[in-house]
Length: 156
Length: 176
Image (tube, rainbow over all chains, first blue to last red; front, side, top):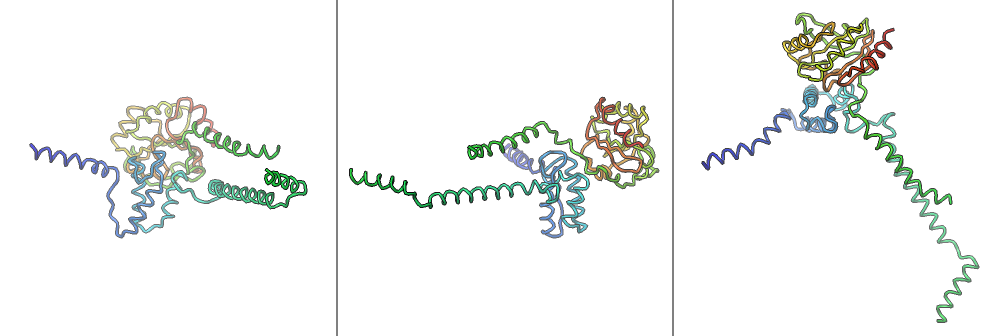
């Protein structure tokens, strides 16, 4: 009985592994560099069917097809850029998690930098304005008032 | 006073951002243009569903405005869409089917049961043509002009009202 329970437990523990294997294939790579490129590419390509999942961890059939293509093209010796271009030609910019820097995406990449720059300019201007007002010499009237205040304190 | 108004700038910026985000709530992420728009229909060489001996390629689509519908027996929405496609065929639109990731038997059964509005069906069991078309589900429909250029793309179900409101006007637009 105990042995049976232990066996069942082992099977239960293995189940999640099986489920994972059903979705993501086991691939053979000639070298670890290619394997790393495969991992990076499948993590940076977005599954067109599932809104916000990389093809590397999606069970949808189209993500599987895309992984097959990535693998096949890596084996053919294609570069990362060629593979990404291949996908974009078919599925559009949508599949890129890192949008490319081009005319249409200039605003996307440029806006945050422009805002940071604008903020820096505002801060510099404010600091300067403040410094100028504090460094300015006291007018005769102000000096008089200051003396009066100091003298009052001394008298008390 | 002017300086005071400047203090409202961040609020203004926030409102603009909020406006964009609010608009995003009602947008359908699946309604995006095909990457193949205004490009040539991808090259292919596949047999037809009807006749395994007959090999067709992209020249099949030249000479006349054609509606290419990607379907499969496994796809329930495709079944619901068939009456609309039959309607389009009745109205004189040339339709070519792509039987996507299917078996020949199932594909033929499907056409026998739900009707066949297609002049011919390209048999794509591995989904290679579908992949080159950027198809990520079925049904998907492409309008190809007489020169074989993709002019319109419809993702998903063609509703009965879509026939008159969008598909037919698009067909007419590219006919001459």
